[in-house]
Length: 394
Image (tube, rainbow, N blue to C red; front, side, top):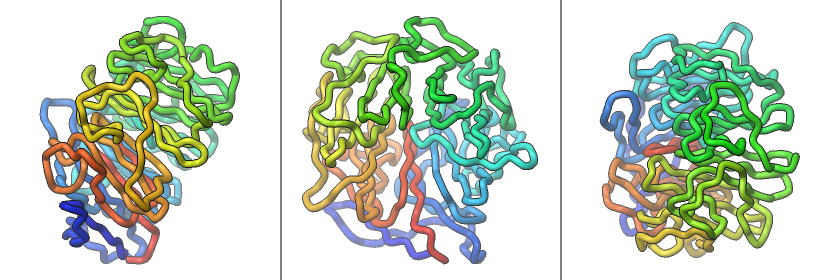
């Protein structure tokens, strides 16, 4: 598989030596590329890669997704593979072992084919997937009851969750969101109103998110103590934690247990929400027409608008791509942000203490660093990122 990559060190175009998890000798094999660090379970960072590294899958990849501890690749045949930490059963293979270099198959019941996985993102040490029948499956930690099974027990293999006709899923920390038959539900911890039901009560069973006005949801997003829903009309609502202006409504430090609409000059086309602790949290959006806006915490310059001033932005502010570059999708993690351009280039900026930027450096990237020239999709959460690459023969 031919993949062109460049790292930024003064916008260098030197090609790196990617490390493959196994040799590319199988003509049916495909690869994805990852960098950054996994954490979860016991204290520490694991599987750290400061530069992009190849992960080899046994077939063409349709989607990629991330959690804080684990990454996932959905293959075109409906099978799902995972790699990273497995301490809470989040690999979904029936064990609690780790597997950093070799993807393992997530064990669904016979006949189950997966149609989609969340790309922004999955709960702490927990996996989610939607099958071709619109049913949703979950496995792993479930420490806040985010799997809606009326318990907080962990699962080493996927279990069927009590929701149907599911079209969108997102989760982070210990809560998760589900669009089921046109209604948005939430489960899990509710520390700052992140379930959006008008209360601060946690719930291990589905509760309805209030205040979306019956609008059809096109995308759900989640981060630490925050949630968001993009409607098909282009209206964007978020709710939960707001210490750094995460809600974008102009009123910092005023958390909300119901959705609030973010004031933006044009309808939203795509949204990415990030944040992993009390001291970070940000949202980036692409509007219809291509304008880029962001709000929330900016201690590492993750908003992309002023090179990391240590400020917070409680209302949306404009940011711009590098000259001559057009972004078509965004992603963001704990305090690092990413963009995929119309030509397939991936840029990263913000914190990089465990390699989140992917340029081999540990300093904060104040301006976008060019990481790779060849990607079709991107997913990030916490301190790691994974990209899908063009589907070509090795």
